Amino acid sequence: IFTAAEKASIASIWSKVAGHESAIGAEALERLFLSFPQSKTYFSHFDVSHGSKDLQSHGGKVLKAIGSAAQHLNDLDFALSSLSELHARKLRVDPGNFRLLSHAIQVTLAVHFPNQFTAEAQAAWDKFLSAVSSTLVSQYR
Ligand code: ZNH
Image (tube, rainbow, N blue to C red):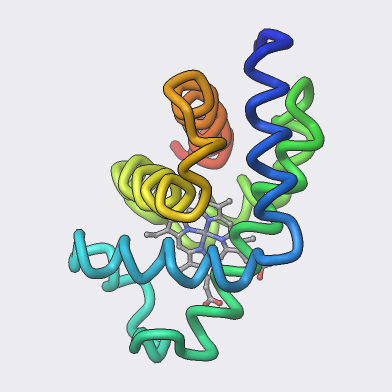
């Protein structure tokens, strides 16, 4: 459950990201892989060098999924149901990695949008990305 102020913070930062999903997503993944090398093990089939096509393309997919979640804050379970199924049934990513990716995304937002990324916005994004992460791991068993 998000307050009106949290929803406004999420929407305001998302409006800056929209249109730049691949670049922001690639940077977030690069930060994840550099800071937490173990997270790279899921992507052994990727070229993870700086700015690679694989980073751009996968980063774009991840950020677009987050953008679509940002549009469905009241209904994340429904909005993310097929992605939850994919992560639980097929990818089986260790749930701890979601927190690390959420952190890398927040650092990337902070670097690009310092004026928008206030303490309130950071708290709202942290809550939002945690909610997305819990939804994506909700079908694990
Ligand atoms: Zn994930 C995939 C989203 C987290 C790993 N993903 C994916 C996709 C998307 C996503 C959209 C695509 C799908 C299709 O294609 O259909 N993710 C996401 C999100 C998140 C995530 C939103 C949070 C927020 N992931 C994650 C993590 C990890 C992962 C944390 C680890 C580290 N994913 C993954 C993989 C894949 C995916 C491995 C597959 C890739 C390829 O392409 O191969």
